[in-house]
Length: 106
Length: 120
Image (cartoon, rainbow over all chains, first blue to last red; front, side):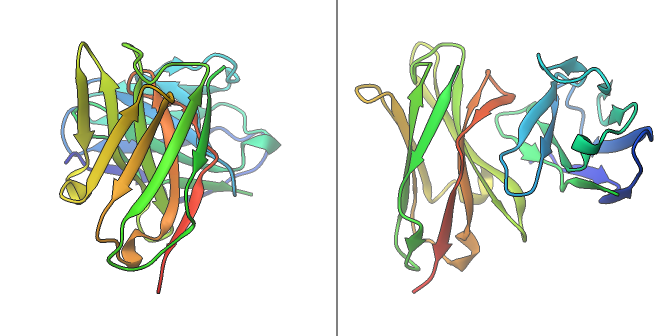
């Protein structure tokens, strides 16, 4: 199985900050990576797919980049609604794996 | 808009079989462009993908290595739903179970989740 290492596990930030989360794959996954946001008690919500494609309706302050084994999710200016846990997910192979998550907190 | 309605028991005894269903509205289980997934989440294991079923001229399944010997995901075209069976459960299988639609691989729509506890 492809392993996904996500860091940091926790990130302290303030409204207006630029935030970057990194996800590293144990082998190349081309651009087959998605990012999800999950708030406490809620279902994960897709933000970005194919590493850098923004899902319709997701604010443009979210962006993704990377290919191969190294990927980043950037929030250009953190808003109050963005405090949540973020997960990367690879879907290169016949199986799917998620990162351990990054909790963005105040 | 796709909606996924999960159903099934929230308590399963050790060594027994966990069974959940996911009813689909707004799409078809036999869609040639979607895949129908089961995922679980627990504090100890994080988010863990379990497997999927999808139709590409014929029915196909992919399963996570960690549960491959115990899992079955089946479509039901007559009811437009898909199901999860996980046999020989242990307390390690305690988690919130989600069904989700893949388009075809990123997970665009999720069920609300079913908390399942494995306990005698």
